[in-house]
Amino acid sequence: MKKIITIVAIFFINSIFAASSNTEKDNTTNEVAQSVIEIIDPPGAAALTIIVDSLSSLKELKKHNQSTIENIKALINVKLFPHLDVNTALKISLKGYWEDLDFKQRQVFYKYIVQSLVNDYAAILVTYDNLDSINVSVDPEIVRKDNRALVKLRITFNDDPKVTIVSLKMIRSNRWKVYDVVFSGVSLVKNYRSQFKSYIRRNGLEALVEKISNKLDNV
Figure: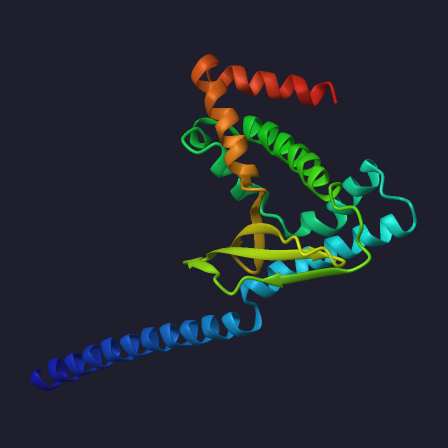
């Protein structure tokens, strides 16, 4: 009987050590994977690719005299939107109220934010005029916190010494995506949040949902 108890005890202890060893291996694997991701997919490189690709496409539109606001919006949908995290932008814009919304109401805000982002990004891109020569560089001082990053891009056009600063707030799940853009010192998402919060305080959340629904119906 003592032998059986001893064998069971040894088996139990070995099982604990094995489980602990596997956990340590998993943690080590995750750490290695994360370090590799930092090398092959840093936020600065992702931000640079997004902006350069968008500006290059805008340059082509202007080259062919096709840079209408409608075409710029189409450019945003094709080139920029796959790199945007609209859900994160939406949750930040409605911070404090998001959990109070049902699925249908969230869909209303989602459609509204998508529409607003397209319009606002188009308003930014349309300000870029002479694009014969574009130089985009990443500020080395990238702010990181967990799976988020703030990347500042320095943009110059042609021989103009004036530097345009565009900051991308990014978040990473399986890849880096943009959830906010700061242009001329103005955060688009903070601007939405301020507007929503002000209206809700005056009229209530339900009134805001109704107002946005009506706006979408009239588009």
